[in-house]
Image (cartoon, rainbow, N blue to C red; front, side):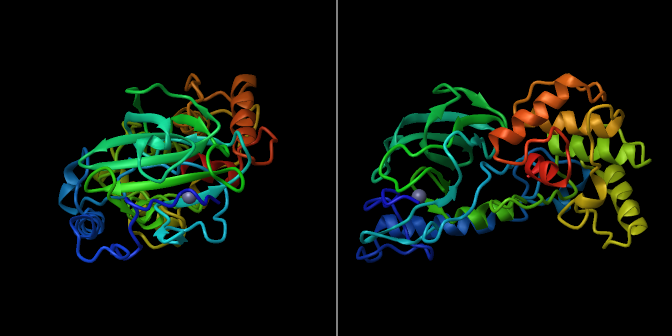
Length: 328
Ligand SMILES: [Zn+2]
């Protein structure tokens, strides 16, 4: 974990208060920032379909930024030399892939992101609406300043630059303006992403690549969906029928209960819509494959590369662990 993730001027504690500062503007803003984070739940934050009335923040637009473990003391708000830890640390080895948590623009690519108290090579993405994510202690950058990035795109490599005790990603979420940090685990959970590495949650009204993945998997399951990336009524009704058939709660949410029934274990020689789903999921993580439904040597190499970069067992086979990492 990092010592340096302490941010004497910028950090806030988990409850949004500021140490020793009384009710300063910063403390007040931090409190509001937390409020914004919570208020965002249930509001449409992007393109929606006919189900906008029930739109959820679990809209398929967010992605897990890195696989690893949460080190002791690496949580948001942990004491750091009189300040509070401004992010969540995710530990893994140097070179582990780091991915954009959502679509956005690279607004900082510099030591500590230019923010008070941070050290090491850092990226800051702006996602619009006052939302930012911060990726610290990187060993390498894979995007340029001002670049536009997609959710799940590889943007850097995990490292140990700056004031750290070992390699990890220091990940921050800001809501209500740059510098207004909120708890990353809760922020992502509200958007359907488990920073701890579990299956994502995709609600009706969602859109994007992960929705395409679910539609391609559903087609392989015999539900014949158009892979248009829009999780509207046709797709969600089909998922409810699938859930009923599997004895699951038919809520239309593609979440931890449904994903294990939806994915297939695939290997070289497999072919079909489920392979298209795998190729789409790999492309969301920057694989650059042709989505042709044929699991040949090129797809095998892409699976092995993804597994290697994310410290999974490198067997070239897409089983549940690899699927969970890809779509998370
Ligand atoms: Zn940290």
